[in-house]
Image 1 (cartoon, rainbow, N blue to C red):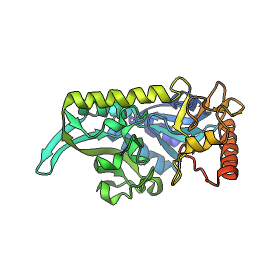
Image 2: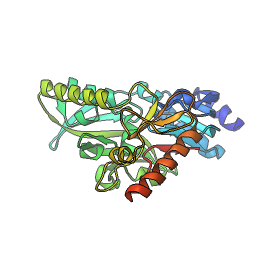
Image 3: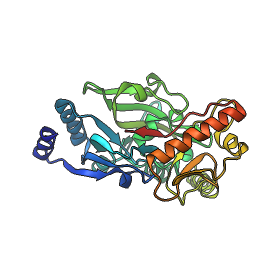
Image 4: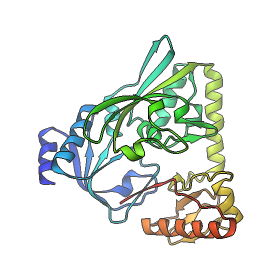
Amino acid sequence: MEQLKQQLQAAGILYKENEPLSAHCTFRIGGPADLFVMPRDEDQLCQTVQFCKQAEIRYYLLGNGSNILFADEGFRGAVIDVSAEAAGMGLSIYQNADGDYISAPAGLKLSELCKFALQHGYTGLEFAYGIPGTVGGAVYMNAGAYGGEMKDVLDAVSYLTADGRWVDREASELDFSYRHSAFEENGACILGAVFHLEKGDPDAIKARMNELMQKRIDKQPLDKPSAGSTFKRPAGAFAAALIDQCGLRGYRHGGAAVSDKHCGFVVNLGGATCADVLALCDEVRAIVKEKTGYDLEKEIRVVK
């Protein structure tokens, strides 16, 4: 760890020691990271990953922290804040014979990408407006909502491979499926993404974005800390409906609870621990399995 800190200092890369991860995720849960690194651009991000590999320090790439449950014990190693590097990179539009494209850095908030597309009259990303994550995180898990998924508009991804090589790949090569991509297995660091979009009517695009945002406000417990949808949608059913059917609306374990407003969300009522959330998820899964036969799978990522 001392070697890593010296390398970061020499390269002018900012970091904090023993930084509470509860301050960097929407669940507001998690112990301290040994190092919390804040690269300011793509070069520093690549350097940080390389330094961690050289020092044999485990690392975790953190975006907006909107789909993460950090362990109460924290993270032994380096958490790298990729949202910081987005400030050092801009969005860009380019065109070729196949159409129009927007290139975005991994650390950019998805909502900012949607606003940029609207500003320039591009349609296709309306479904993503309101998803509380970064471009990289959304690509990683093939985020989706209201009938759309990232793979529907994604053209290509730039990333560092597990052995440190810079690679550009077409989306068709990256095994996208429901809430899944090749990045869940390949250990790569997503650097940026390119989206293939079409020109549309700005008024219609804005109206659709506002409509979907209002649906989120009306139906989701946005007033309480959570990590979004807790469980994946099982084939042939909806997780929230199954949980509600089993009488689990408001079900609690410690400071964690199934939301009264939307049963697909586990929320932090105040002071919830990682252990509370995991115990609650296990209890809900067991009851749903027993009563309905469906086996729910967590959508949130648990990082220990």
